Amino acid sequence: MAWAKKKPKKIPEPLDEKALFNYAVGSLGRRMRTVVQLTRLMRPKVEQGETGEQKIAAVVEKLKEYNFLDDAAFATNFTRLRQENQSFGRRRVQQDLTQKGIHPELAAETLNTAYSDIDEEALARQHLTRKRTKQPTNDKEARRIMGQLMRAGFSSTVIFKILKTWNVPEEMLSGLEDVDE
Image (cartoon, rainbow, N blue to C red; front, side):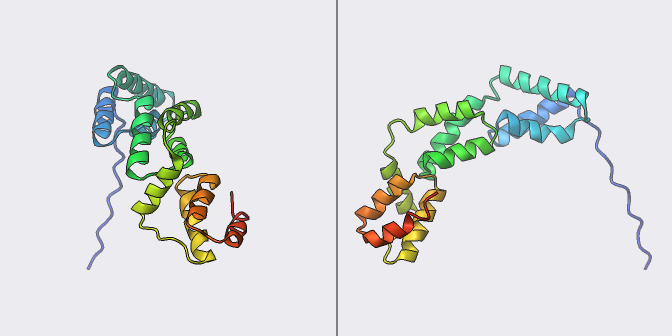
């Protein structure tokens, strides 16, 4: 049997500004994105260099003008959803916003507003309940719970408060302080 010749991959033509705008709107229709995320997504669709960057900048400006692209609204909604649905602490949400390309000042402002009247200890307990975490009976389980809460973005102060209310022996807690951050 003869092997079929491979056809060379067809390199797609770079999109013009109108097609790029339609691509961006479709992308935003599927998922809310930040300016940084959308720019990253559009970059392979245009030619490299200054011409492509100008197209991207024009599309981003047009999207902002139509209020389709708003980093402040994204940060507010993302924070609210992470807080309500996953019961994540402030640190975790801040880290996630940074990964999404939100400017640090905007992230800090959003988090200050969102977490101003939130009891972090209650949120951590809610997180543990959602994860069906049981009270630790030994040092290994206490370390696991501490790691779980730290990954969820809670401060060590809150974690130790919770462990103390669970009557975790003092010697276990002193062993855990070495793990702290």
